[in-house]
Image 1 (cartoon, one colour):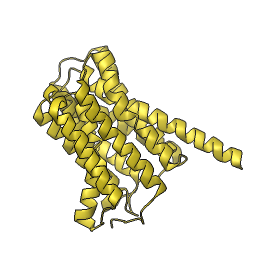
Image 2: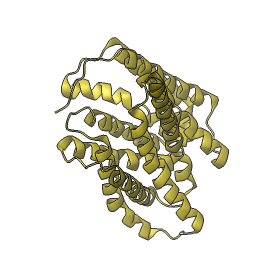
Image 3: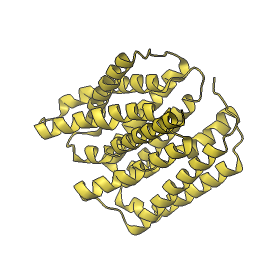
Image 4: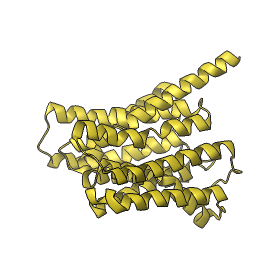
Length: 289
């Protein structure tokens, strides 16, 4: 029995690692594509929805339709849309680091909307993340437009909405993911008609973004999170904001300054430590109905 449990944990950790690797390719793929942000987002979401849809059929997972699911789907649309826009308007490092501030917005929104009092660790985590963002502001934001950085923060707010809606008993993460991607694909894919570059490289990159960075990533994540201890999961998922700008720096030659890197390490490191702490010290569940 113990050997089976260890095998399940190992399998879950591998799935979480694969999910992080898939997620981390987003910045590079978006940078390489000559299309507009809306066209990229529409096309990749259609492909991603197709991949997850086939997964749902294969596993016979029935879609859930509820208010939390629909709000989660809207949040998912916001995440993918704003993240794509941010990557076109600012550096990949800025976009992913600011999106990774989502837990701060979860804490703030839960306090404001559901009157969930933050714990001392929550406050320390918010302060540490804001410190990292301020360090990033000093130098890192000079590399990207202020509007792009603001859009990246909006992506983090929407990501917080995804986490909050998944806290409801009537929620279903994979349903929100599928419906959000399908809606974004239908809404934004007409922007592809304005594009002129439909070369093999462009089409392969778009397909890879949808199939790998969205579709497979969320499938691996859903499989891994069931088998992986929370501390392990939080540490592995912390690889995404680290690897994302690395791929862009290697293959797209976009880099950030040393001070900006320090700010990114403070943000990512603080959230990894915070996630590890709350995994060992869970608060009583607060469900949003």
